[in-house]
Image 1 (cartoon, rainbow, N blue to C red):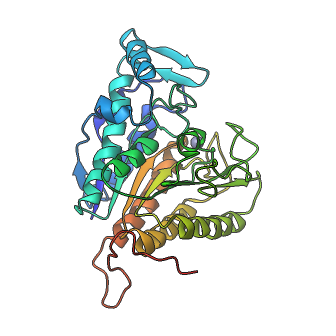
Image 2 (cartoon, protein in one colour; image 1 turned 90 degrees about the vertical axis):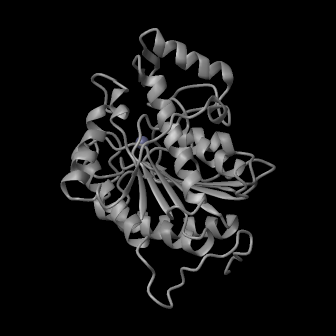
Length: 331
Ligand SMILES: [Zn+2]
């Protein structure tokens, strides 16, 4: 069983002629519906995030600024980010979905959840919108998990862009590991391999910059080996995915030559680590992906993997839950 968060209200964040537009999400939902995958999930209606949840990452003045900007009709809130009159409510709904998914997965309602939300979040900073993002959905979800008693969280960001907002939030936080594989040099300019965490949290951040033209096989090998190293250091009790699909070869913005099936492989790697350390608990949040049909295919293969792992484990399979804190690193 996988919890699936989607809602027609996510289409109300209107951005005009912009790559991050409602047609992306509509294409995904239509596709999943057509192939019967929507029906295979447990659909959950997302609640709006509380201000308390937004404050886990964002400054009160910034939250007010976004609300006021939207209420006054919206426009361009920063160079790349467009806001419409409903965007504040929609962005709150995205955060609400992420926190609710964490809550339910921690409560054991399902091992995994997929939040098909807009706007994306991983570039959003505590006091600024950036790169199509208003609130940092995944960062708030991680803090919400800590608030719920989880001791260590791992965020896996395979969006083609570096998750600079998420990295900034957890730079000096020993409880949250952050892994990002991304095209480099590229927007937003951060994410060098030397960026590994602040003095209170050395080695909790792993950046894997990948040059344009890197073969898929090499990308996947880097993903698996570097992520496994970080997971063994962090020993997360919950894994969150910043699931952007703009590294797909057809993507008009990112284009790192990946095929849809590569996202299935990466999902398998994350699920394997989740079984090893985190009782299989994974919450995945949509980030980028700007070719609607390619995005729909990528989400399909990603969701198929999430659903497979939730099937009853065959006898003898290593899928038993370990109490938090007792999962020891193997090497
Ligand atoms: Zn992106």
